[in-house]
Image (tube, helix red, strand yellow):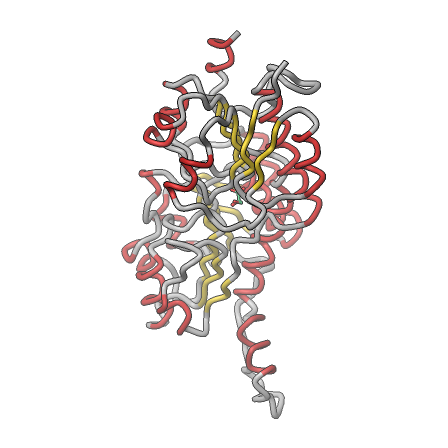
Length: 333
Ligand code: DGY
């Protein structure tokens, strides 16, 4: 039997490549340079499957140029880089990596929110610049996290993880805005109250953005939304660039409209809006919320499991663990 060929579009753990190589001919982007679109299309020629990350965009044009593709497996829970409908229409299985990163990402969201509220990055830069000459009563005085009101915009698995940390660990009052309401028992455990976006923005001391990026959530936090927030409030974005209007946020931070922000994701990343680099009251990290070694390995392994299974290989042949369009499998079966 001929072994299917797959593309691993970015560098990844060697043990994951070895697992794939036990079943497939593997073409790895060892250089780890993000392929241009024509390069990606060309490199997919003859490939039955692709192991991708958020930096590869999969859409109708790419799929039509590679009609032999049967599976595109994302090493990320977010899948705004994949046109799932276009995949489904062409019988291509798409998958993501939910669950394995929930707690790690919630840890990071909470850490970024705390660093933002307590001005950790800003004060560290000050110390490194050699500007610390004396203690002062108001030096880097920030905002309390314990007992404050936490507003979670988007209450999926990661949002609930952030809310749990706030409610159970820090005695925070939790507000959340989400399309659907949580089951009553989950609300009760978190002491969480379902409110509309405007109420959440007006009443929260710390707003954490955890929604998927879709046309509906584009600039969910824009200048008008920021204008509703308390001047003492913080905003943390661990969702996707584009959910927050970065230019409007930079202007709000500069004007002191809100106290501070923590951003792990950016519109047009890895570029960062230049105005954000100029304001001191923002903590900036390079899209690392899920980046603990065990979690990144779990994500890569899950993406590989999906790829092998979608191609009818390995112990779970035919049953990818986390498909986005399982109806494709039913059709193939
Ligand atoms: C995810 O899993 O969606 C993270 O943002 C990493 O891309």
